[in-house]
Image 1 (cartoon, rainbow, N blue to C red):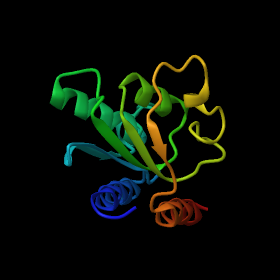
Image 2: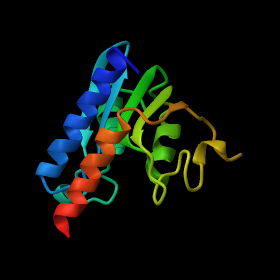
Image 3: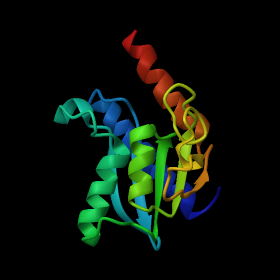
Image 4: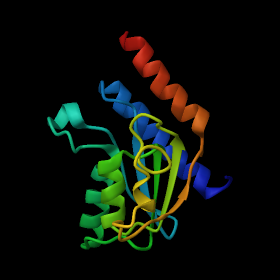
Length: 150
């Protein structure tokens, strides 16, 4: 991926780095509509004492508030790690148009790993999915974070 998409993933990576500086698992997310960033955040589960405060859900909440809508059908989400089941569901419920993610998550991912949420018959909306964007950088951030904690 080149151009604006790469820069949006770069912003998500910056949010992931900020999350790591706060002691959070380094995952960042950015929501974009028509080339404009509506929301950007990183994990804040420890800071907020909230197990749902993943980067994706925080960005979705901010974008929905900005647009005063529970739906984001013309929006794209860039996130550094394959979303978990909770975040995959939130992305579906928000009707996000496209999902771009960095590293795959064979243990906790739910898009192309694990439950493959969007391919289930009970899924009402599946975004277009593009994985592997800045994959090595995203994976290195996570690997370094966990190595430093061992």
